[in-house]
Structures are given as structure tokens and as C-alpha cells.
Length: 318
Image (cartoon, rainbow, N blue to C red):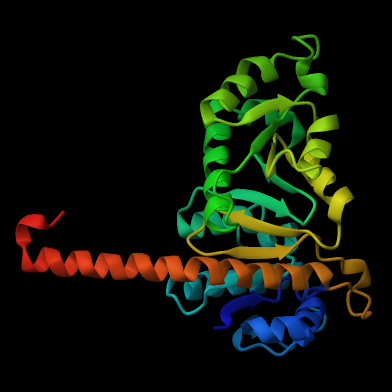
């Protein structure tokens, strides 16, 4: 059975419409997916679910408003069970804000809309990186990192690797915050005072220095690395796999994937965009949907059977 996926066009000023069209034209996508394209009319790609009209010279505010409406509609469809997952083309975060949506990006917006605790993962055939903090200034990272947040990120990561990637016993490492993991306090105490106890509590390895932990993961020692802040994790995965990596939001009630790049406003409309990551995101979303759908079906059947027994025997009701 093909996966039915919602695919948002993203910011209509960028390369979103182009990579959506190229992904839809890929034979692998057609063989494995039924795609419902969501976005504005006149954006350069045919949409099945329109959220309004794009004007050729529309500005950031309109682009952000339409981008946000498409995300809202995709989430509604996923929660209602009309689609098995969501694939999102890139948005412009400042435009999203100008359009009336006060979120740093897709990840935070999806978490709010679904009331979920989530984690951002970038994955490829070479490396998986999960962020303990996402879109915040570097000066705030040490304030935001806590044992609780790291333990929660590790839990979400472990569950995601088990359920969505079929890894029964995930091996997870924690990347250090400071050079050489603090070097016994010489370069900071966060690694010894916060990260090391959190790693023990979460049942993961580390913290290990950033200059070695990603290499160790790429050599097969770990299934994923939790990075303490955005750029250390994003730099590692994009150096390893730019153009083929996929952004996935762990912890949602449905799979959501996106390409590993932004809107590329500078090349929009020139037919120069590489759709490889968008195609990879679509195929990964379909794979996860196929993996979790049977399990969800079995759980639903078990719940119905339990409800049926409970109705026949009220004393068994929970």
C-alpha cells in the first residue's frame, strides 16, 4: 500500500515549488507515495489543497502567512488520519513571523500544534544528529541546557530510533559543549556538572568532544549523537551529507520530514535547485509511515478488543 503524504510548498518565493515539482516527477516517489500538495495557487506547482493565492510580487508577509496556513492544514490532515505523514518544503523563518506565526521554525510550530515534546534530527546514511537545543542564540545555550532537557531529548531519540528506524537497542552518544569536554574544568564546568550526570541518568554515552564523537558515529560506534546546540550538530551532518540528509521531527504523533536546506531565495525560479534532499525526505517519510502503520493498526485493534471486552464486562473497564 502506498503511503499517503501531505507535502507543503513552503515559502513560494523560494525553491520550494521547484523541488516539490521535481520530487513529484521522481519515479520512486510515484511508486511509493500518494502525495497531497498543500500551498497557494499560482505558486508554480499544482496544489490539491489550496490555502490562498500567491501574487508574483508578493512580499515576505504574504509568503509567511501562506506558508503557515499550509503547515496548519497539513497538521490537521495528519491528526485526522487523512494522511500518514507530512513532508515540508523550506520556509523563511522571518517571513513566517511577519505572516503572523511566532515560531522559530517548523519544529517548534509542529510541537505546539500537536502538543508534543519533540526533538530535531538530521539523518543520512552516514550520520544521525539530534539537537538538545534548537533555534536560540549561542549565548543562551549554557542557560538552556539542563539534565532534564538532555534526558528528555535522549528519551525522544531512543523512542524514535526504535519505532521509526527499527533499531531495538539504540546506541546514543552525547556531544560535549566545551572544547575537550571541558578538560577537567579548564574550559568550563558544564560538561562535568550538567552533561555527564545527564548522560548517566539517560543511559547514554558521553559527553565526548565534538572533534571526535561524530567521527566515531560515522564509523558505526553510535546510532545517533545528541548535540548541545544547533551549529555544532548541523555542521557535522551537513559536512557529512549535505544534499542527501533529511530533517525529521521526532516525538510527533506522525512522521514529518523535510530537506536539509533552506529556501535558497537567490536561485529561486531559475530551475537550478537540487531536489535530492526533498526526494530523500519524501521516501523516508513513506518508509516510516509504512513501518508504523501496521503497528498502529494492531494497537487500534487491540484497543477495540479491550473496549469490547470492557463493555461486555464493566468490571474490567479502566
